[in-house]
Length: 163
Length: 462
Ligand SMILES: [Zn+2]
Image (cartoon, rainbow over all chains, first blue to last red; front, side):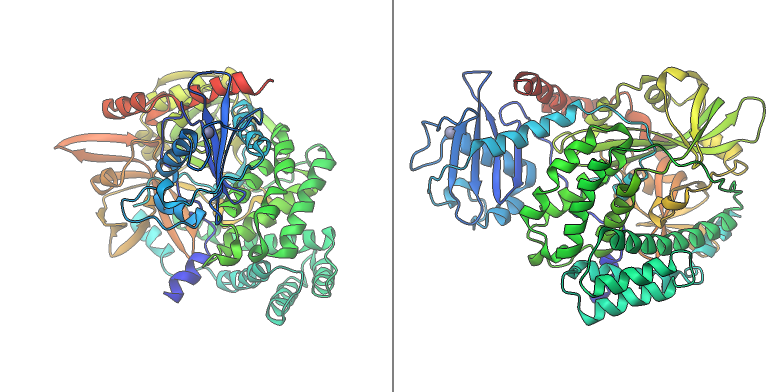
């Protein structure tokens, strides 16, 4: 085991970030585990111009949901609104239950539901931070293609599914 | 014959490689704990590195920098010298490995001719990168938390807007994503010390005065594709095509690489990534249809990288990459490696192998010679699977070296499936998947790129 560990630590190419699973993006275009939160953006069902910014904080499990214009979500009081539920469901699809639960530091019973495993503290986190991370995310799609040699990418071979 | 040649590679590392990598490991361990309060053991490791390089042209600067860093004075120039010293060691390891590989394959490699340095880059951007890299060196990987990672965001965003600094941008973005996923690193069981020190060192060298591609010659001729390698992290995908270039006018054929990289986000995965490179239909079409490419006045860099311009190429007749490999690969002249790119990780030498048997993850080459397969490197964006490799009788692959051994990454195989001969290449889906089951699954999942572009159109320019 020690030999395996030493070998892993002395390799240039190892998988550090587990691959994410593909999922439909229409309703929840953005999900991430970052800044100590599961956070993301949920499209409004009624207004195509509006999105909700929702998050669950790791450790405290505080819930937050508001529009991108910082208006609090009317459906969030005492229990998770549908936006937070959708965010949690999509996060589990994207990262797998294990990784999400570990990040949020929450115990989920086998075949259990993530949201039902949380306490229901509501604590608004600023939507602007998450929304600007979403815009930054979208901005990648506007970065032009490159045909430079980019030798750096030899450290990042595409890998198939974990076997 | 190749059996015996490759078999020779299995018998231990070339002289000096283990010793050089031991010095590198000492440095890497120092970086795990950070330079803020350097312990006895890391201090000794840095001194050993300085000692080994004392007689080199960098010797004095490295010696002085180690003294300063150990004494707690961590200046940019000291870190640059340390990164340079580490690069000299990994460069020497690269040269020894590639030399032994060339000898085993009987491959001729052109000599490096010093190319003039490339232009100047906005120094404020590079300075921003150096600030972050210095912070990482001070706190060490174990000291990295969310705040340390987030402080790289602005610098990376700025870099992405400068085409010449794209390499540094994708490097730092990949490193930041790994650190973010590992936060807080203090609680991580094992730290990928070699990998992160590699990335840190290269980033620090690139952020001195930008990349070092040097000058290019304009070339015309015919490119015969051998196959494609795919590189990817959350926010980038790149296809790198390996091929044999026949210069117009009859000069000897050369081994070249050419590539297209596209920015992406983590939720764009699998065969959908090819669509992001749709701005290069001639190259992707030739990959998918196995055609030659007629090239006119395209820049070829000293390191053998053809800087692809889709409008300076047109597809020619069909050409089977296996035929190209059988007839041309053995005699083609390989390109030299730019000095600062010399690192074992860059070794990706195309080879053609047949007459073997597959046992799990190993090729038995005959004569008792074995070669390990790297089946992790079969990307989900391609039709090449471990099952096809297991059923194969001939293989085009790339030889890599990591963790003390050579491995073969298949990029195309000839196999027998349901008693019928098939040939499968990593680039076969370059114009979209050809397997009806995969097409159906893709359609069902919806077009991630289109959904995000719609959202970007609505929300980004407000
Ligand atoms: Zn809500």
